Length: 112
Length: 112
Image (tube, rainbow over all chains, first blue to last red):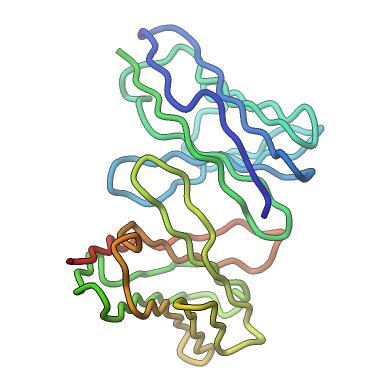
């Protein structure tokens, strides 16, 4: 089946710094990738839809200047959390669409 | 917009027994209904899906049923095993060009 990878799997950063998370589709090309955020014991919350070669579409309430998304190729999308604060600590999950949506393993971000 | 409700939030069954998780959706235009399994600290994994032109789909111990008239769909797991313990999410969408609308999740506990 289709495989999506994320890097890093976990990261700890200091408040005020920026963190980049990569999402790659390993064995297929994905015109569209999605970024989700998940708090403990809650469902996935869609943050943005990323289309290759164009600007991402952000969901209501998601700050586009804080969560920078770049979908530079058909196999790579990146999410950069800028000027991170402790409230940005969460589990970030990407997915890529090849008919169905296939999810990456997630990235645990902890901001101290 | 679409709304997906999922019940129960927690389900505990004896190993070997069956488990049933139910979801209802509000938008009659929805035509794709996937189920995802999420283990602790990992991304969701697609386990089965059904489209609106089909009433039931089965894959070994897992089956999904869809009632379009009542706008609800269910996940059935038979002969449950310890490795079935996880959080299960249902979702609905109007097709591959639309985002998934997620249920709140069901924590399935298999008692030995």
